[in-house]
Image (cartoon, rainbow, N blue to C red; front, side, top):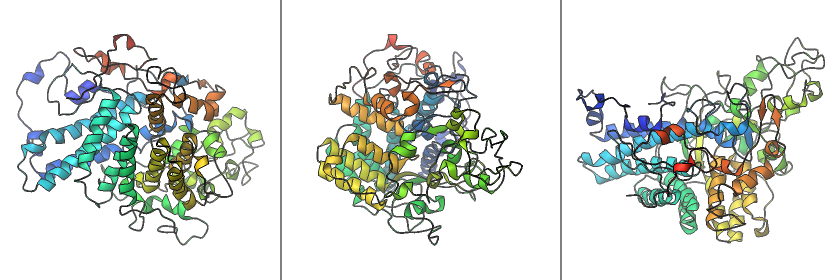
Length: 580
């Protein structure tokens, strides 16, 4: 299933075969048919491994699902659409996507439901086996609930209302209906409240644990406006076997030129036994066999500028850079697939007091040197005044968080290495936000300060705590790690449901915090920036991504709603509020 990304959802999930009746004909079962695989613990464990790989694949690509989250937010825009069929930014958000490279909404929708399918197979078949130990059965079921909740959390914070599929589908089904976002949140919150009882306190790196379950439960409870449950779940993590890393450790610990923030993000340190901050991660090692190893992280390709390009000119007008040499091996083949905004790169930082923005951790644009031996400026810092047009700096010259994107290895897009999914700093920021919504600002400030003080940043007081400050702090701490677009949308729903600041659910697609926040922070949208044949505009309805139209059109016996602002809303019906 892994390579199938352009097939409509109904085919992907339901083994649908158009008008053919071939599916009615009996076929001999292969050795790998479900009836022959899911008969014991080993078979179900293999399915859990598959679900783990689905989360892994969200990260390892220059235009991965996680990269797309930043390219649709306050922190970035899509920075390299030059080869896309569509040149105008809003048009990448279209229901007509096919799940391909530049189809932002279709990629997440298809990938999420593919993994949900695996979870539902386990959930539906778990009691077809006679288990010697109830604990074994419940641990496997808890893992499936975890992975299913993970993807539904992603879906409801990118698309809003979506169909909830809660069981294995073994034959053609064309009568799906959209469920309310709130009904789905109620369901996955209840699932996880049960699941965390059966997840282990500790496990091998990459496996689900009680800490990972509680962290996800805190996020879901926060989205569901159950702030007390969010605080309790986050506290269960914080008081568990975790601690923020405050001392040097692991790879490079003996190099005095770096700091603990650098150590924290070395790929070899993410699952180092000394690292007490890791809650949940995915594993990718160069020594892994084919099939278990990704091509590379591609984080440098996603977030670093294309500094190596011929458009980075020297004073003679010639190419000042080449894509070989030591500098190229270090900074890799950046492509600015998510072109980071001045807001994130420069505006939110206290350069004097924040290790996260220290010179050891970042590469400033003027620290890159012309590396073309044939250039008269060889070895000198880049001079932007030599560029053919100032707009070329958009993709080719800006500062970047080297400590987050440095994945050494042979791949020029970024080498192999583990990646965080959840870590303790994020848990503190979840709890801080829950305290904020309860107006317990002293408690919120204390949690924010735990994260800030580790970075050497100045402490704040309760008077400083706002939702905008919390998301500035999330940007400083969690850049490249969390689904930024979805987290902004999550807050937009919280405000709208509480009728805060003029927002409401009825008018969500015309007026929401996501749009206002993006327009306040993202310079490229503020000025309708144009670069080559690309331009950047955004509208309030772009907070929610469109449902792929193939999913809607092939569901001939039911109705899957389209989000307002996109074509195809005329058939919408009220979403289901109860999950059977």
